[in-house]
Length: 434
Ligand SMILES: C[S@@+](CC[C@H](N)C(=O)[O-])C[C@H]1O[C@@H](n2cnc3c(N)ncnc32)[C@H](O)[C@@H]1O
Image 1 (cartoon, protein in one colour):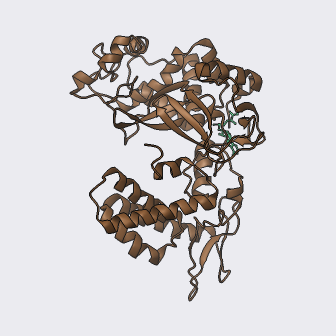
Image 2 (image 1 turned 90 degrees about the vertical axis):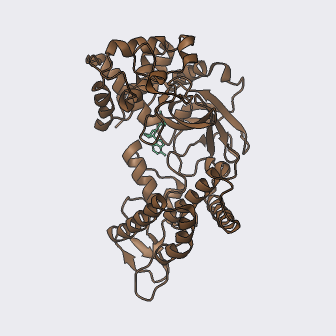
Image 3 (image 1 turned 45 degrees about the vertical axis):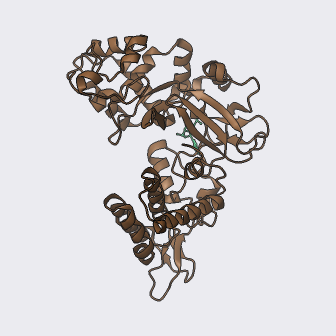
């Protein structure tokens, strides 16, 4: 499924290009190295023992741009990602490229080349921000890379998928003169594929507002996946990622990242990884139907008189049978998937339509009737309460705060069982990351 060319560049050359790309952020004696991985392709490995909490590396983006996804603000500057105030006339670049750029960035000259390129393509509408032409900014920037950085981009793995072409088609509809030649479209398609294979969607705080950035990092992008990874990452700003050790990492061990949400159950993670990253994960957690005793997949047994829980028999296949841990009745995957979907839809519906108070009542009183407390959908609902209460501080009763604290402790206990160490979610919940 991967486009071929990245393999033609030897791993040692990729490592050299990464050193160049890191520039002043490369430490003299880094605790990591890039070599071939038994998991897949190239990977990042510990050059010596790394202690839990230790910095592994900091890296600036190779490419970035606005995500321009549905739930994000479009009126942020495409260079510094600051929120732009005012009407469209004040937000859009006065030269007519149709992109939102702040006055300060217009003056640095940093926007000049991409402004010229966008104007050359002739935007069809210069009076408003079009999310499809905004999203192509992160891709178009591949034109502006230096020769060495372009080589690094081409050395990154690029999975192919017909669906990725849609991004280019949608963008081309926004311009009179979007490139049509095979070479440019090929380079764009490859860049879109590299993004889809390696990118991080970073949420970064710029001037007190949360901004969502599509960011490509050459070194961080080399980290292979593990469902309970040994590293964590966060963004320092919209163009800098910080990777830290979530646990002690022994010399020679591969440094891994988690591409999925850590609290998803195995079926949800496998579905996501196959669908978006084109591989089947075989990590220890995926092969353990109890997921280290967290029972994130568990559903109630439907046999009459049985109060047991049902979990997948094994996890190596996507649609395994399920078995009750008490009465041992086996149920086909399709049947259990229906129950899981019911729980997912019911709880998601509540999350989207309820106040925090109503959601807490629903979690405490209704959910126990149809969903074991360990099930990941219920855990996600508790997480939702924590996020909402931390965003609107000071508006809640003592009792609601106690429920929130209990949910937080339950989630921390699940992460402890998973062996997630100081993972990103733990840091967010315990407020280590602002
Ligand atoms: C971000 S890249 C990781 C770096 C990649 N190994 C390379 O050589 O460039 C993501 C791709 O690596 C592979 N990969 C990552 N983690 C994997 C895993 N746990 N099992 C199998 N393949 C994995 C998949 O092909 C995936 O699409």
